[in-house]
Length: 241
Image (cartoon, rainbow, N blue to C red; front, side, top):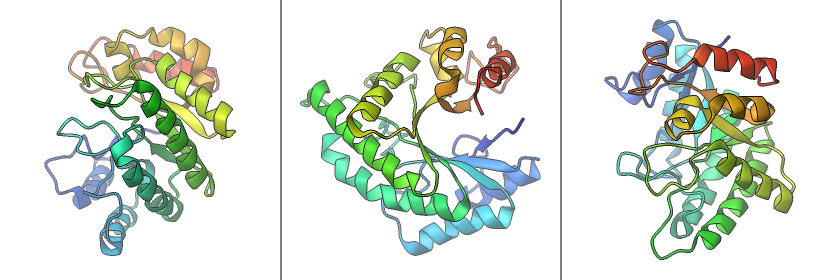
């Protein structure tokens, strides 16, 4: 079983470009990152610096987020945010290019918070269109767009697996793309009250990626009460990976 270190959450005592090498030194061969730049379209030098840090460390980039806005400030994605839709669309080619050059196939598109003054219907329509465009962009190199329910964000509308799967079904129905998948973060699902075991039984085949942390505290596996090993094993039995 291969585990990937999220270098945007762990190793944060180090500068970002030093984290891939630190992950390798800790015994990991794979890393993933939230969007590592301040803008949707960074300079060529910034992109090269990031890519070189991955390659020089000898690790595989297995996951990369699209620009999700100011995460520490409470943003949770641009996908369904009407005023920032152009930023998301501009980000697609940059993300796809990094993925193609580094062999990364999984790209997390955080859906976005509900925005005051915008209807949910409008946001969801824009979200479906943007997810389809992103899926087409990364499909050129065999990539998959991931859609994630998250916890701890009061205005984020995708809380349980069913919420994300409903959006994924809409994207497929309206645009015909089939490379938008569920990112099953077992910690987020459990904290939000989802029946994780039932989600696995019914939808493991729909998982594009699994993320784990233990509860309480979002700690390392084994520090809390979640049966993460059992859930991962059952997901694999039912077709994940």
